[in-house]
Image 1 (cartoon, rainbow, N blue to C red):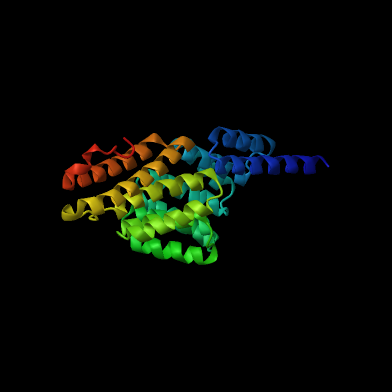
Image 2: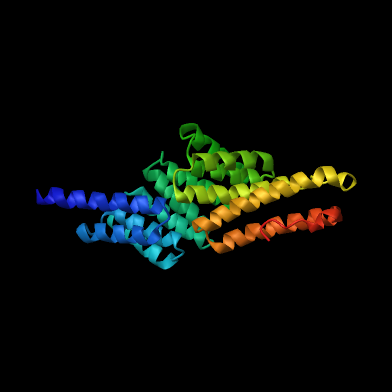
Length: 266
């Protein structure tokens, strides 16, 4: 009876940790993982969850420590390797990241989360075509998963297929069921909308071609406003806003009559 109560308590803490991560509440997530570990020291899911929470908070060393502990105590648990791979990727060590992801896949060949991580790694190392193939394969099994659609949008964007990237990011936003998924989709959609406006203004037809571009850029800016209100990192928003402002400036240069309009996000 006592064992059942403890196990039940650990399970409740782990569920609470996962739900807090989905909502982007890192403080509540950390508290839940620590509560689980207090009841069951060495619990694999809690160690991984704590490491991932630190990782999302940008605390690399505590994240590595938690993943290392997970690996030492549970060498057959694929998520430990995946966590260390994500840390290596954040540190700019793609070779080590790939090694860790491949170790994770050796233990769990069908693990979609590791395949997704490899797709993100391929994007970060200038392999968007390979990433697109990987995301498309994953979407065959999980067609409604927002983070996969968002990854697909980023791959299409890197391949300069902006209209398709807008469609993928829009679908990701529609399918998102948690805060983090929505944040990622909003950022991708804003970047894709900005990209789709490139070379769409005709100097000889400013009255006809410039207004639709401003409307698209304003929509991108609204996506960023929504992401910022949800708590996305300010640096990510500002980087995307600068892209919008540069595109707006390029339209103004071609069609000076439009310079009286308010700059999106400005």
